[in-house]
Amino acid sequence: MKDARGEEKGDVAGQAGGSRAERGAGAPTWAQELLDHLRPTSRDVRRVVAWLAETVDGTAALQDDSGALVAGTPMALDESLVADILAGRIASAATADEDNHLRLVRVEHPNPVSAGAGVLAVARPEPFDRRTSDILTHTVQVLELLLRARGTTEAGRRLKRATSDLRLAILQLLMVEDTVSARRVAAGLWPGLLDTDTACVYVLEGDAGQRDRLAEECLGVTGDRALVVRCPAMDEHVIVVTPGDTAGEALRSLVDRNPGTLLGGSSRQSLARTATAYGQAVSALAVARVRPDKAALYSERNRPERLMDPAALREWTARLLRPLDGLPHHTRAELLATTRLGLEFTAVSAAKVLGVSRNTVRARMERVESLLRTDFTDLTVRATVHLALSTQVSLADGQGEHGGPRQTLVRLGDLLAGPALETWARELLGRLDSDARDLRRTLRSWIAAGGNAERAAQALAVHAQTVREHVRSAEPVLERRLIASGSDLYEVVLAHLAAGELDHPVLLRDDPGHPDSPVHG
Image (cartoon, rainbow, N blue to C red):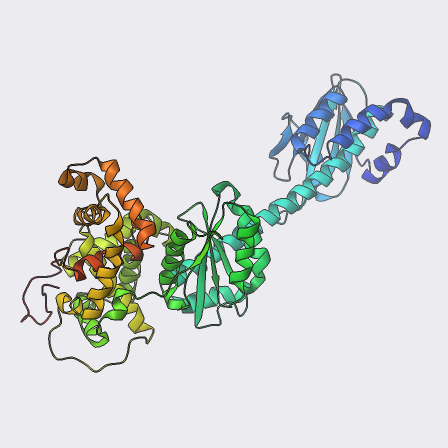
């Protein structure tokens, strides 16, 4: 066998051009074909290697520095030659025997982990003439361009993915009220982003297939002044957490430019209440659907807790959640945050938002059920516990601190008995009376059935689809989302309780004398 080592790459490159007459004799066809592989729609390393093998009437293989095949047909190569080329001692080599003529050429391959080079091997029955040498040399140049472009693209893609994952991690920390860790994580890439006590949350809803583009547009209009996250629970949603006041108008401009896109925004909340703000933004989407401009902010309407005696509400909340007080602080915080999200959304959605399994969410909520000795399948129970959890967050924020301590035992019935709350409840539910389909009766039965359309239909002697249609029809009238679990639905449930149209839930044993007050309400 003949073995020709040390054929310098620079020398081959110098020969590749040849004379003008030589290039003109046969080059235009293969040169044009090779250039076509640089078009944006044709950039594929495997196609280039396959084209090379076919053009020189032989076989070709491109392998990386580990010996793994990148493209082409596997072939046995002299390991010492390959090692010399990868080490940079030689740029190319040629061998020949009775059956084949082989060329090995170093191909620069951007690789941040390794030496950053590969080997292109080409074998053919006939010796390499000037034309095939030219083809090989220019193909190496094209491969290096493609590999460099692919490396840059992949690096950019990895960076985008890592940045996106980091944004999601920050949001998940905010959702469980770990603002200290969220600020620490954000400080490395977005200094000052979370150096604030309050923020607003916006949710954009659009076509799931266009969400990546919509997220990029959100990043473009907000810059580094907002946290933009692709919602892990809803494929159609992009979540934006912004401390400033200018992002709202910028996001509204995206709605104008993207037909079919909706925008819902929260009221300003503390960072610890990011989960609450998120729920408000999702709730505002229901209003945005019926608005001409397809955008809406959560209305600071007279929510039921605002119409209750603050001191009584605080005492009732503290007593209801007292069974959790004996838990370690981090365990209690974890259970409360998970239960808040689990009541606001489905277990599956809450799991995606928190970055845990749905079984973990269910297990935590079942533990809270056990500690509170209650049943979350009952919508009135869910609404009542949600009221307590929302109040607990407000107290942690330092809101609602006015009013002295109360000595009397407060029950849920006492909280719901105020004239202001009763007036609010009757006004809200009275909006349904103008509909001849008796939406109010259907909604009341549906709530009593735990939000189950089939059971409500049996009680009403109608079809389940009729129940669903009536509940959906009630949503724009009440300006609240009902089909999806959450704060809107719980407000309507509390309105039914305050108006006396549903029985009060049994939360704990009716034993006012017990130190833990496991009382009715």
